[in-house]
Length: 121
Image 1 (spheres, helix red, strand yellow):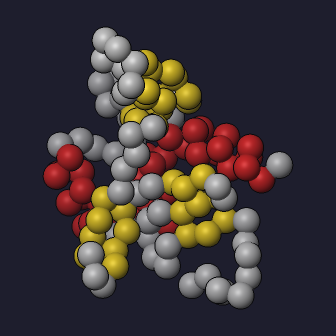
Image 2 (image 1 turned 90 degrees about the horizontal axis):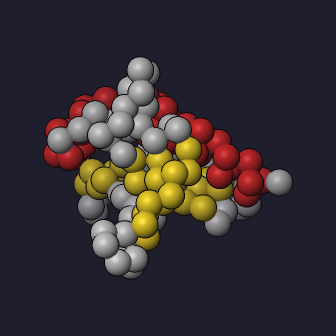
């Protein structure tokens, strides 16, 4: 549990996700999470390196298990690599003709590491 009197550079939810919660989220979404994303949500659930919040799956007494998502960054599940990782794209839905996609990283782990490094330097 995070000490509320501290202001750590990285903040996480109290608990990571159980394999059962992750499997349920995958079933509901009809996909398999890539290994790097699965590892991070197993460990943290959701987390942030201010001002960036990394969304995942969290559990609260009030809401139960909630899958949090982002429309800014998305995984392209149609392009898995040999390790089961999906590239990460930024999506701008306001652009005509279906939006504008910008490749941010080859995997979620690479994306998260780059974001953390940028925010902590």
